[in-house]
Length: 322
Image (cartoon, rainbow, N blue to C red; front, side, top):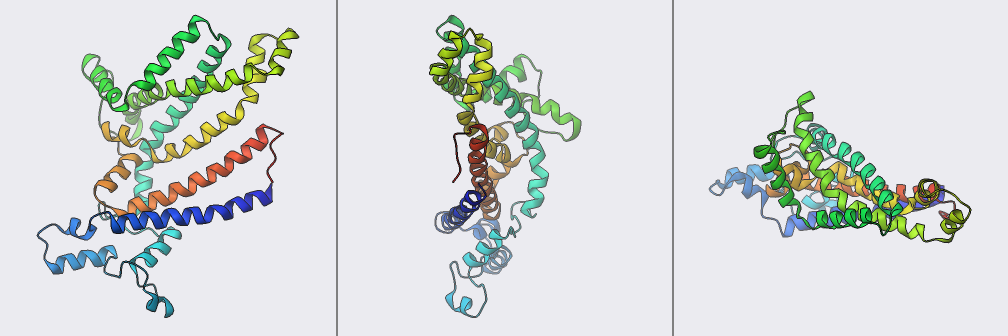
């Protein structure tokens, strides 16, 4: 297993490098000039040049071969490329603060919503899927499946607006926008957590129901039933355990979303989290934040894929990592 982990880490390096290069190229070719955006339309050449120097854009855009031959990094690409690789992120022009300070400031709001919503949602998805799989073909199965499909069909934006209208005007139980730190944050986080659970319940229930039903129709389940094993014991002891591989895949691949936060959710409810940080950085062409967050998320995602493979081997003895 150790050799497999080392090989996977080595294969991850070109993927992460490719993500950084593609992100830089997109910002350099497609995005507008950030110096002009921050200096203003009527900025003098002197002011514009000062902004370019501050943002590190006064250098050539790509690699300067002559400077590299002398052991210097002169191009904007090569200097920023190596800075990002070693987590030396430039200061954000929008907030005038280092990226790590922004992450420390905004991560608690995202984590306060995403972690409880993820735990509650996973428990409800698995329990509901077990409930309907145990009653396959009966009216609870048909009813819950219909509600799950209905919930999957409703656009997220419509659900957010409906929740704000319902709990902000009809039943003013929760605040529908804004944020406060400390204990009061629980009151502001309650509605986004509720909406996140409701929005994800339909898809997860359908997915896990399908996975569990595939196991229900296997030979070992029919053998257990023939021996008189109770249906509850079959579902929890045998079926759920053997269905862990797709469950692990779905859970682990959802973890990067906990780090980034929900972009649209935080924007609609005005939550100062990592999701709103990313949206603001994209709107303001703040390349240091976007490139830094993209680099961090690519590393996290690749590592989580490796963790997924390791969990496969731990959950199923038939899986061998070679």
